[in-house]
Image 1 (cartoon, rainbow, N blue to C red):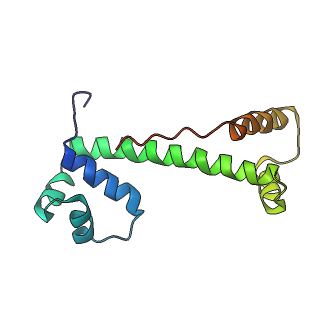
Image 2: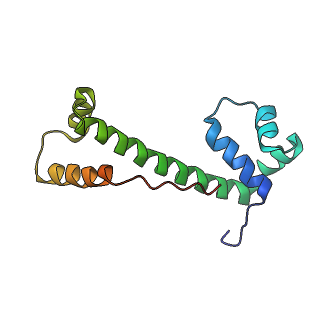
Length: 119
């Protein structure tokens, strides 16, 4: 699979599927990706495409998850009590390891977010 190179149509479809978050019909996805329904169904049975798409989904979710965590931490640091409560529910009482985690996250939250628009 290391030699697999997605076509522009594959990249457009992946982008539509990732941004749609589910709930779009095949017809709507095809229209947004500018592909035919036959191409859609062909891609959805292509093992190489599906492996690549799965990796794209993992990358997308991981990237978005970190953004959510940093935004949540920023809310807590700004004094949002619900955000603070959720942090304590997630990490429990403060100990050295938790304090270090919060400090690391605070440093990340203070830095500008680097986003990638590779699509």
